[in-house]
Image (cartoon, rainbow, N blue to C red):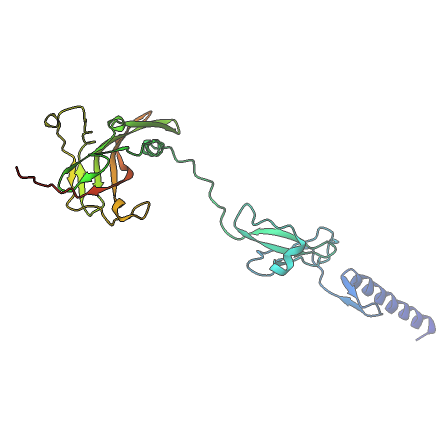
Length: 294
């Protein structure tokens, strides 16, 4: 073979190697800084998955077409890592805070939903007549019963003690309340009095009792609410410590029946009873009669 033919053959080989090298460079994704070239299969696609289900990836928006971008990484926020972020207790849906790290960008916190969207708040429940009635009953101002004990200033063993509450308070009391456009009126009516007499005795009276009137003859007065002590109050607690001034604590408890009616909606009926009470100290003396012969 002539020298000219060998030179032309050599040039063809060199040209073929140059063309092969230029084709391979189109797929380069990295070099080691030296003379070695790493050739790989380039792609322009990326994927993203739920952080709660595994490693998630997303593109950073700045990758060259045909070259795989480095993925962003997600990791749940640990308590020790949350100090640098102003994290609210939660987002608009059930989820969890994650730290997101993408190449070339600052680390950030992101709320990632992990459950179904919470249902919208239910509409406000319409006010009921019973709710308005309960509020009205709670606003009724009832008096503590003023007590009338006769005879005064002390009772006598084996002699009837008249019991009464002041008749001026024995009448209905009412109050009105409005809730959500419904108006209800509650009425408290006194029905009975329970007297605890301090010596163990109890008297139940269906009304206020009768106040003794010293201006009228005894024969013209009667009562259905009274109590007869069988012993004196000597030695009972006293304000001054003197056993002769001992007294029984007498408590009168009034029971009030409560009813209600409504305007703006059907309704009415009864509510739980109310109670008011007062206590007074009653001294009971032992009176001895002395017979004198003629």
